[in-house]
Image 1 (cartoon, rainbow, N blue to C red):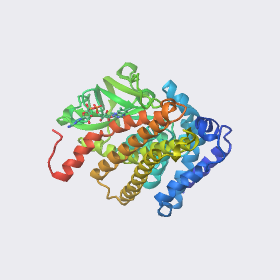
Image 2 (image 1 turned 90 degrees about the vertical axis):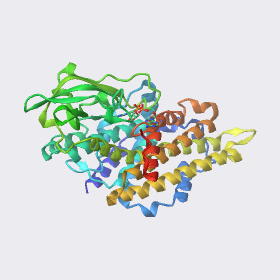
Image 3 (image 1 turned 30 degrees about the horizontal axis):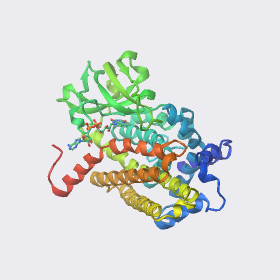
Length: 436
Ligand SMILES: Cc1cc2nc3c(=O)[nH]c(=O)nc-3n(C[C@H](O)[C@H](O)[C@H](O)COP(=O)(O)OP(=O)(O)OC[C@H]3O[C@@H](n4cnc5c(N)ncnc54)[C@H](O)[C@@H]3O)c2cc1C
């Protein structure tokens, strides 16, 4: 019932929006000017017909997808080109994202929407159709930070933080990676040392942390000195930490995920109450289970970027005249489009299958590795093809394709690189560990 409330609230937001569709239509530039070609929705339906999965989705799943798609096109899309140019997230939209119930949407209770994992995946797809940075923000908040607190926190900790994270009153980040420990998180150097019975002292640096510069709290993974270096998770609250003990400088110069602030977390004798230790954490399997949870949403999400590239290339090809006829009429263009459509449909079918397995509680980490690796590689191919199909204009931000192409480079690397997932699959297939 909570989910239906969210959609009802969203519809109210959409109906009162004066900026609806304006800049998004302009962004389509040349492709929006013709009356002779089929409407965008009609062409989308052609791909939907090939996919032929509507009958496999529940009403609630369709509502989740379509409502978020409407919000992204009417409320988010008008801001993204400028946000990408200046390298910041359009923060004024955070209350709307929270009001939609998108933070921790697949968590039950404590102010969260409690949707199933297929609805959640479809939401990720629609967010990433807008921008991978938007999806990253929602993924980190819900699937890493809130998931960690929900899965490993005490009831008191859940009640303390989850409602405020769901409402967007607090923004969180997830600090696992370090400058010298990325694919190999066991090499982390961050330590937590007990300081009497009521506090820990954290020291170390985290790197490449999504949302760190904005975060009110961070789930930090550290080796606990008194437990033989066992990895535990701590919730570090910025407001409760001495200013110079918890510092989150931005990483500048990014050409990817520019609308998603990324930072470091520097902890210098950072004093954290023992009450902020997540009691259920114990060993590296704890953060790795958070990553498995989040990367399933990423595998769904990245296809949204591919869909936007596909639709953009199709629109452009139908409009652009080369050698006195539409670009879309040429065989080479159609072959590229056919490859994109095949990749997208394959990715979506895999997502639906694995989403159902996740809802049934039987999805395995190896399946998630295959899913993430496949769908990100497929989206990367689609964005690269679309970029070339648009010719020169494709390298500008007059179209979203180059932005998606750049964004997908981060998605290819974070939450386990393409290569690391190949190794995980290889180990499962052969029984031989090729990681080390
Ligand atoms: C934009 C962005 C946002 C991020 N957000 C977060 C976040 O919120 N929280 C967080 O904790 N982390 C985050 N990360 C970090 C991300 O998860 C790491 O970048 C990733 O795990 C890779 O680690 P690394 O960059 O240190 O590369 P490395 O581990 O140094 O890898 C370098 C290369 O070596 C390859 N490689 C590694 N090991 C092997 C091997 N055994 N065999 C063969 N090849 C190998 C890799 O595939 C890669 O190609 C983010 C990263 C980016 C780019």
